[in-house]
Image (cartoon, rainbow, N blue to C red):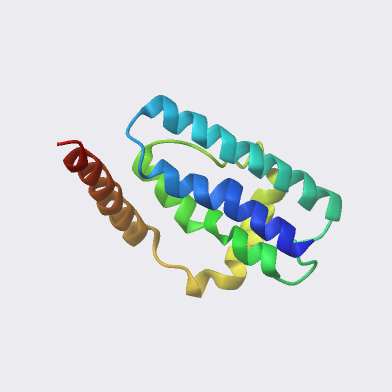
Length: 135
């Protein structure tokens, strides 16, 4: 089951966040963000059903590591693109999970401001590359 959920996170959240960075159309960004938010709602229900602190139970497991993308990385992407995927009011169990998870790994997380700078440059290079390929 852990591999199933880790794959779910990769396909429904990580890939969508990566795709968002290459988009220029705001409406398309919003649609992709909605899809990722729906995937988060599915994970919310799974975490709620488990009734545990983490997807791995009371300790961090494979799914928790895969979902680490919703910590600083997602926050940075949301800031750069001005789109919103994660809302703690809509996902209270994931919000609690996120707080608990970050408590364990905060010393290993890259600083958000550095990620924001990186994603701005990445997005710009993708957009510039697309524009150059059209010439």
